[in-house]
Image 1 (cartoon, rainbow, N blue to C red):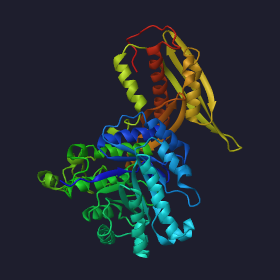
Image 2 (image 1 turned 135 degrees about the vertical axis):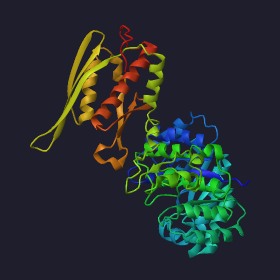
Image 3 (image 1 turned 30 degrees about the vertical axis):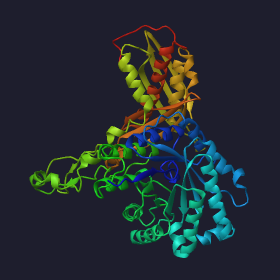
Image 4 (image 1 turned 90 degrees about the horizontal axis):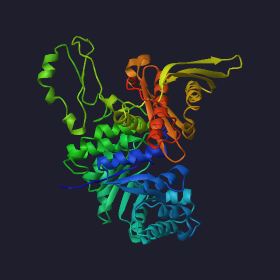
Length: 512
């Protein structure tokens, strides 16, 4: 069976989408999930271009990936810098990644107008950049930027850029539809022509500006491409990139090709929701294969006729991509059946701290840290237009009751300060943790103001990070639950080491 290598660039290309800002912790968790799915190459980012990506590659060295290989992204050397002195290329070498993917110009107009150099000099830049990385033992992919436009403008020169990368030792040439305007038939024709002149393995990197990202990717595969790049849920700059989830499902279920395998494909819906959660971007219900309505069927007046032939309705078995099928009421609402979604089960998966707390509580069911008696928070805006929030908290530890109050820049800030005021005299070691990120996401958007909200609070001790979550139709309650989980988790960790923990009695009647 023909095998297609999948290359995920969610952490770099996907992170360029407006509104997405992955933390280093997010990137590490997503990497592990992609590895579990069976993605062969995971592009972690552009080391040296920003502190976050540089930190990611440092921490990623501790990951124990079972199937995937990390890729560092960069570009060919600068026009006026010797290849051995180019900071970007050196950062790729120092990243610790075994694979480097460098982007280079293939459009003659861009070489002249953007790089402001000669066509011959650009060929040397490509060849030298690839050769340097190969000399350091790296596998090298060459991202041929704007290749399809470049081919249409000057086919001879576009092929020469690929040949230069091959001379440098490139392992794969990735043809990029950078502006997302190429039609599937155009891509197929050009790839067929390229294969007659270039023997190096080819890849495809399609954007979605004409909503053709997936179609172009599949057309490229049918034309002989062996390597497909994309992002989970199609995240990316402008209109996004090819949705790797849709590409993957179509490769396996429609074209009969192998990428991650049918068993791993059953995790597809879970990974789509997981990355959606990390990106804090609600997954559209109509998303193919992974959306909550992907396999839903509007019920007509006679529901029984649909139920009798339900198995024939979906174009593929929903279970093959890990999706539970929905049955949706029609406009007449005569069936009395309500719609449902399987997305809620993914909402706590990103909250590794909350999951750890649950495991610890199962092991230490009698441990008593503190019990919340009451809490309240209010926000007041003054005539000057400045709003401040006040919070009051009462907790019980043993037979003693402690109260705290605080004023903060917002409700969550005030609640955090008030809770700490109660607990710090007893547990001074709590000072080592602090909030580092706060995210809110509305679930079940069709329920409007009655929707469930998920609050994700990220904590740090200066060395590592973890997250706790709260789910509620009241966002303040969800925020409070996430804060309390964070404090309780830290107390259970301290209990394990007895660091900063006073002697407290055990009361098995208390429960979280």
